[in-house]
Image (tube, rainbow, N blue to C red):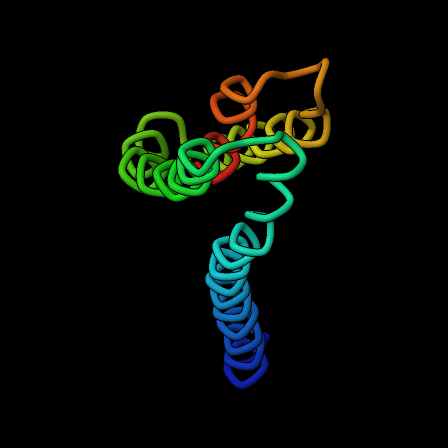
Length: 121
């Protein structure tokens, strides 16, 4: 492999990594903004007061802070790939919990504890 072809493949790799990082930042911002659009639906769907709605919104952001705080330690201990897989599994479980959070399946507090906070970790 010549130096110029190796340099091209490295450049493509760097561009793909930068695009993935930018997309991750975009998705975080998008996820944070989406919770704002769900405030009215949370209030009417759960017949919730302002305390519950505020708690649901703030715990989504608190989950992000807790996840960011522990992410490096977890990645150092178990490896980056395993940490990302565990994060994806946790997100999937919490997304399913959010989907099932209707009346008889989950109460308001269970919805917050099980579904919203872990989703952003």
